[in-house]
Amino acid sequence: MSLFYSDEEIQRLDRQALEALQLFRLKRVISQALKTPFYKERLGSVGINHAEDFKCLKDMEKIPYTTKDDLRDTYPYGLLAAHKDDVVRMHASSGTTGKPTVIYQTQRDLDNWTNLTKRSLIATGCTHKDVFQNMMTYGLFTGGIGLHYGAESLGMFVIPASSGNTLRQFMLMKDFQTTVVHATPSYMLHLYAQMEEMGYKRQDFALKKAMIGAEPHTEEVRKRIETLFGIEAYNSYGLSEMNGPSVAFECEEKSGMHVWEDGYIMEIVDEVSLKPISDGQQGELVLTNLIREATPIIRYRTKDLTSIIPGACSCGRTSRRIQRIMGRTDDMLIINGVNVFPSQIEEVIMKVPEIGNNYRILIRKKGTLDEMIIETEVGPNILTDDTRDLYKLKNRICEELRASITIRPQVEFHEPGRLPVQQGKAIRVIDERGGICCDLE
Ligand code: ADP
Ligand code: ZN
Image 1 (tube, rainbow, N blue to C red):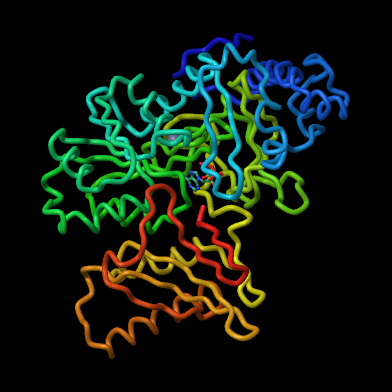
Image 2 (image 1 turned 180 degrees about the horizontal axis):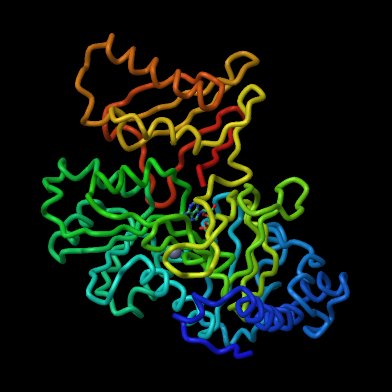
């Protein structure tokens, strides 16, 4: 059986051919991993001392999971499997949940990653004729640079705008007639909210598509972005431990994100028992990178919750798809004993046309009880400033929230532009109960 395919072919391999390719690549990753003291010990503990000890993909189940703590404990060079002279770049996670974790890449690793980011852009219908304005942060964070190289490799006209400076973003979009942007969904909503204030109209732009990712967002947010700008928005998922963007990406069908399975082995496990679960059921995504030699990472627990979408995508690509990420296991809020995910709240409030594009969730103690306050900006659709009407609207939202999350939070309205906006990932949750701040990613 051949293991050499064009990129077009690789996206349409049948299961058997794909698994043969995965096994071939996994063995290569294992022999790299065995060069690190960490994996020598980990893999040795389950009888894998050479790549040949690994016979079939099922053998994966023997290998213990790798966690963010493992990556932190081996900082800075404990997982480096290539010679330092061969490393051409490093990246780090955003450090959302503590000390950042570091990843190294050789030139070959970067080429492999670029291939996937290019493939992802093609899957959304981008071509070399597009003008690509990259509004993701450039730097250690993988979001900006990652898609930059894919876009260049596709031959797009790339504007490396990076994040922030909304006025300049509008100027670039107008002057260079940007057709595709890459941004966090929260930044897209912020952009729209600022548009008129900064003297622009939708018709000033030639925008057709947005690649949105780096943070959880609901279908309601996607729809809002699409309707407000009159564009198509595609969900982009990735994490620095696996390289960054283009672990999974939506195609033009927009029916879940294709995990590029020639580059990553995906498993979905129950987040408590850590046992595999069947397609369609929600659990924690576990990923193994098959295309990186400098930093091999095997069975990485992402903490991201999703499920495999059963069946094939009508685009013809055979790589399986996952549902949008519901959040991280540690995003779950426990409010007076009730489990709530911020995405459940977003789903309700973003459906309300009178609600603007920014919101946050405050949690604090009132006596012995937890209190949840949803602060939202009101949108231009609000037709009244009559306090009775506003009271009725609040009441309606509170009831809709109660129906969805079973608790009744308070809702506070703010004028547009009043709530804070982040340059990178949105900080949606302010939990004052332990003085800890955590975000929605
Ligand atoms: P950090 O873990 O420090 O935030 P990263 O910058 O690598 O580091 O962020 C990766 C994380 O961002 C993912 O594990 C996931 O939680 C979140 N994320 C990335 N893309 C998406 C997306 N499209 N939908 C939901 N969450 C996403
Ligand atoms: Zn598809």
